[in-house]
Structure formats: C-alpha cells, structure tokens
Length: 202
Ligand SMILES: [Zn+2]
Image 1 (cartoon, rainbow, N blue to C red):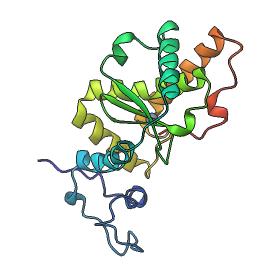
Image 2: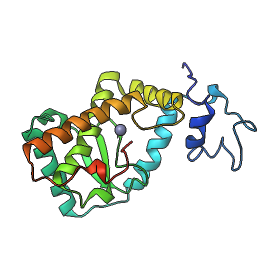
Image 3: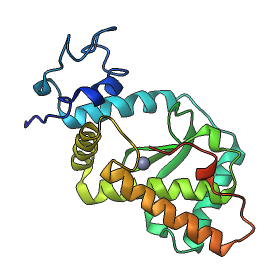
Image 4: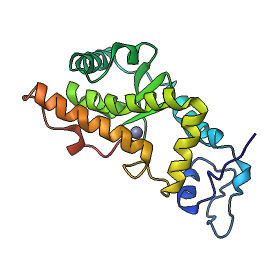
C-alpha cells in the first residue's frame, strides 16, 4: 500500500500528537523525535482522529427535542433549495460532545453536531449542517479513502489548519456562507448568523 507524507510536517504534527500518543511521547519536539512519514497511512491517520470522536459519541444520548431541531433545520435547507432530500437519505445526524469544532463528518453516512448547538436557532443549525453536507459531498466525489487522504494531506500542508486555508474546508465554508445568505434572505427575522457567535467549524 502506498504511503504518503501525511505526517512529515512538524506543524500539523503538533495537532496529531494529541491523538498519536504512541509515536509522539509527552514532551517530545519535532527536532527530538521526528515521525517517520512511512509509519502511517493517511487514511489510518484520519480514522484515528475520527474514532476518538465516534467512541465518545457512542455513549451520548441527546434529548428528543434535539432531534426535532435537526429535522427542522433539514426541512429548512430543503425548502430553501440549499440541500436535496437525497443528501439526507442515508445520512445519520446526531448531537455529540465534539470538544472541538461545531460539526464533524467522520464517514460518508454520519454527521455529528456539537451538543453545544442544541440551543441554536433552526437557521443557525441549518447553516452548520450545510457546511457538513459539503464534506459529505466530498466523500461521495473522492471516495472514502480519497477523502481521508486528501483531508489529511491538505491539513498537513497548512500546518494542521481546519479553517479556510484548508481547500476542502474552504469549499465547505463557501457552502455555509451561501446558506447563511439565503436563509437570511428567506427569513429576515432570523436571529444573527451563527458565525458571529461561534468559532469556525472544522
Ligand atoms: Zn468542515
């Protein structure tokens, strides 16, 4: 299996060290203990990050009202033409304590929303879901391994970033931006944009 240089760059290594404790012993620096690039497969690196979230989320149950809000946001996106019914057909959306960020797509059929968003307006939630739907689309276009390797590679290239400097995140933010504008236009009474109150979503 072809190995990539996913973990070659020291900047992103700091981020991954939070999860890769085995190869990143406490206190080590990039100079002291460089991680051999051939030691990891890029898809494995993505899965290692995703699995920590999946395991944590497996033990979390959100209140019934939370599901109703997800449904309302989904209907809002569909009613405004920002998402299709098909995009939700095989997608499981649940709240979960993400610890970092507002949403995550660990695989092509699963979307986690941070449980801190449960009190958000329907449009605010819809905006976040629109962002994550773009990642679902990226999964579909690249294939599961393609998505994981591209995501890790691009994250390495920008020093571990998950903001607009990351090309795949930039696509997602552009869809989120478009959703925000449309939702504001469709419903002027909608409370302020979520992005004015929340940190960027990875
Ligand atoms: Zn994202």
